[in-house]
Image (cartoon, protein in one colour):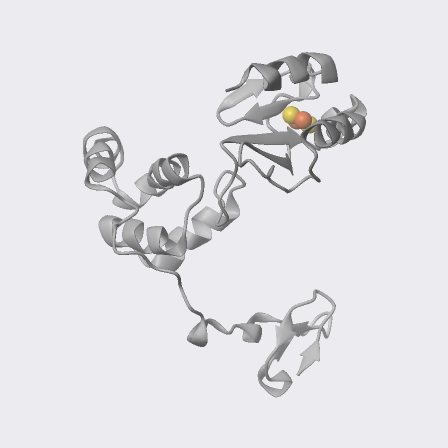
Length: 199
Ligand code: FES
């Protein structure tokens, strides 16, 4: 077994594929998915109510069922504060896709998480415009107020603080999302007032 630069473990270096340009071993042989244990529960994550919402509100808008993947992921994430693997399987079965299609989509977007997030997910933009407007200091102060490091959730499960990339509001930085609400021109004082006003 060997460790490559990216930190991924290649189970069998002889079967790994070498990039012809860089000579670097490609790491996709590292998977242990054959023995991976997926936590399961009897009750489905994708409820009948969610399926009805998808059927009535979303599927009629799109020529292909696959296009409803993101709305389905949002329904699950909003309900459980995470998208477990079992939920990806259920969404895939409902939309006629492979579970890996749904997981690929879920893992691409910051909005969807495998781990349970706090009731309030704070996504603080760390891209260049917001950084120039004081995001670093702001993030330190917010983290100190919440008593956590970025990427963590408070012990009471109320807040998760996560840096993210551009939220598309670069002219009014620093900015952040709290769940689905965009906050712009943030100072620590005005953001602290918002946090203190949340239940
Ligand atoms: S850089 Fe922060 S919203 Fe674009």
